Length: 129
Image (cartoon, rainbow, N blue to C red; front, side, top):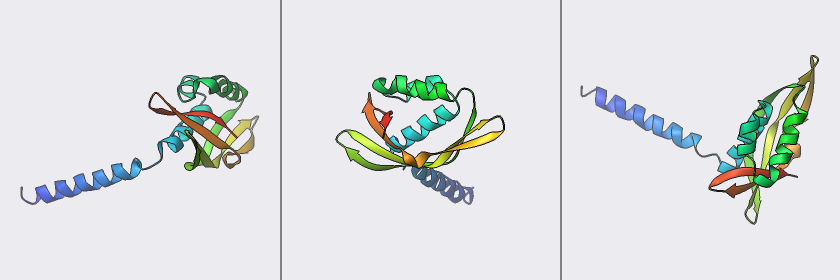
């Protein structure tokens, strides 16, 4: 029993460290990653939940434009790149691939800077530049 206590304590400490590492991503960057994942997986409900009210119609237009293709994300990683007033600016790396009739088209995710706002305690995508 005495040997078991240090082992359990070690595993608890490792689990704590891993959970702390996983939660270190900026919430605005995580919101953009979730938004792009919802867009790629064509989840309209999640997309609207992850969008500012003023951006919802634009998010749904992006959603509609992908209906005829299969999409997937590769190498998605977003980071906070700055702020402007209450708006957080987020840059992403990676690409979205759209496949139609067996042919892939790549969309470079680094060409946009996402604008993220906080509404009701949640970080939401409010547009991009």
